[in-house]
Length: 265
Image (cartoon, rainbow, N blue to C red; front, side, top):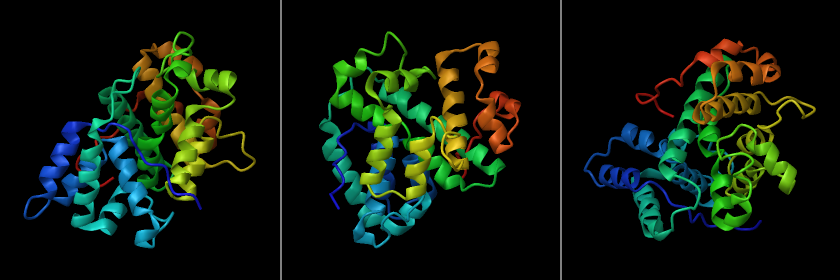
């Protein structure tokens, strides 16, 4: 098995600093540590990659941030953050506001967890899948900036139609890239499969409810960020996916992501 590719993406300096400060305290507040990792897709990806490595004998079994934190312990977490700090020389990614990217990713994660609860799915899996689903977009913007920029005029980064445009031009979407990365980093197969199928969850022979949850959560946040009107959202709503999950359309359109700031992700 090939080693997972090194993650050389910028995280949020403020979140990294808060984590470092928390973990050097005499008695770290692990609930706060959990919340902070849940705010940054890049740091969460590094955490999940580390926890699912062979070093901890839990390869492809760690399904969420709380489980990863319990497994690693404070010393390993400090080492992970020092490595992330050393990587802060990573250049800004052209075409992406990393602060906005992190906020939208977290909103997707929160809504995915909320919807997962309605259909009795694992909330931690839904949260981490929602948080990491856009990592492939970062990698493509970093490694193929000109190729990605060429699509902007046709569909912006947060346009719900963007994945279809990517598939038409490239034969794959950024979320397929995310799935490949998550598999390489050793994340559980159910998370990889949900991200892989999230754009068209009903096309697989066997419907994956977690992929459906991701589809609805990501779609809802895309149209919100894109500023679609209520009429446009209602007309374009993926009703077939909602019906497959047994979730009412109004639940998705009218529901704001639950505030999980006092919860463990």
